[in-house]
Image 1 (cartoon, rainbow, N blue to C red):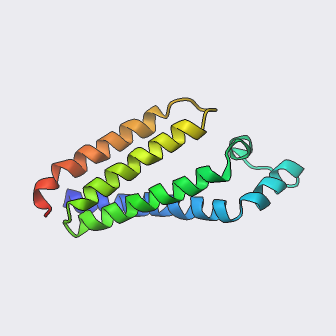
Image 2 (cartoon, rainbow, N blue to C red):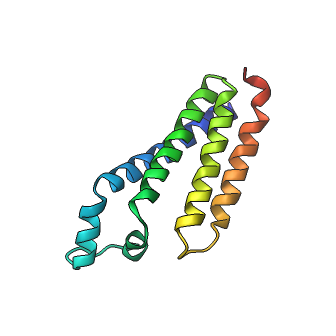
Length: 127
């Protein structure tokens, strides 16, 4: 039951984030031009302008990996745990490397560790 809840949470959060990063990557130059011109203002504009498009590419890949890992675990495949864990570590490294404006992402690290531990508890159920 808890495994299903964890997977659903991952599907929703990582799935939604994958979509946001993917569309940010596709429209990166347009968004950048609009923000720089001052025609559009939004919260976090400075952060977006400080990030290269490769940040959104890596984010798309790693968050999609998290979704695929959760899908494997949903089907009780142990490989999903490893895909999920590697993807989440990739997310943390990407955020820490590119987003120097906000420092070390302590909350994201703790949340990721909690999910990895909770998924790890269910490894014995997986093949």
